[in-house]
Length: 567
Image (cartoon, rainbow, N blue to C red; front, top):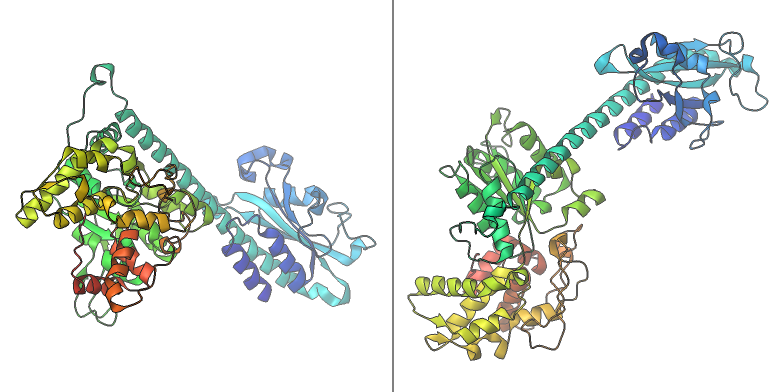
């Protein structure tokens, strides 16, 4: 049975079971002494029963073979005599033959071997989903010298069990491929529909989409996004918001919810990067009382809370491979169980996700499941970085200042000269960095009018220092094709400023350079602000940079009275 266990491990752990067959045949040779093992499948991937009366004319082809007990040595079709293959394919019955000359013709035995000393074992690869169809045949030779004939029954049973495992692996792989192809077709159709939404009719070519509450901007880039959102929001298609950190993914997710027919229902958001896999499972699915230490009462998960509404999963690219499989089930079936529970719950949720990672590269590297990718990326919407919508900087800065005035009971305004200077900035941290800049300048300025002299770039621009000192290498965040920043941050600094980078196929925490250590207690606040700036004011990312937990960084922000402005 050791051979069966090893073969099962190989087949169940392989992405392509057919490609793994040489290793399985090697196991038969090493553990059981079976020689010249080979697997043959029908030429067109069909079944012998599909051929009907012409089944005898079917020509199987060898896809895996061993020679004299060695693997990875392909042989021609003489590894399985055609008469044997056709007999098994037609009958669907395993056979053991000791008459290799009279019954099925001379086999391809090792040089010098006597055919009367060998027996041929052949078993069908049955299609269990469409019995009695047969997909192919697995065969091997047993050397009968030394009384080995007594092992023939055991050999046959082991080969039949391996054939059954192989059939299940092949069938599962085909089902996954079929589902993937269907999802790809649905994704392409949805993408084409979204693209059609922004190709306006001639009479509407000059028409501008109605603005959406809380979304500031009238640049061509933002108008295109608004047009896409208005098109897809009324549908139930899952939406993936792509873009660099700080481009306002949560704001656009709320806009999608407000424009959908679920607007009166809950909008629930979860930052996947802020929680470990175990905590994320409890947060999304809920838990039963006593499910784990500290579970003192039953708790509903975010999926339950968002039932009939919209669930926004931010930083979806950060979830672990183990949790990806659990998330896939509820996206496919709409059902789940709470942690520690056995009752299956069903929900109706519109899913909106967001990421700044290159998910395509993560899928290619195996860090992100392809089937989950196709589930969430039905309609991708690219959010432009601020440097591609400079025309919106004036309106954004004015809007942020109005928000600051309302919160603080002030009446400050910003001059045209200061707005022009802000418009020359690159803002690698995008809209979040612009809001941070405006709030900082408004808090520090002494007059009622903010002029060019009040801007931080004339004294110390922390963001400019941050991006100039960045040492990470790679392509732009999110893999969206943005060109590296080679211009000075404020249009006047001489040093080129690298773009902040998150390696597409690696965890976000691996990309940024180490945070400069604080030399004294007085520098702790500066180091904290430095990390928050580098993380785009996302506490979970800053915590990873500093080697802290999100709870610890939240405490540190309160301790140093650092206000986090959320975009």
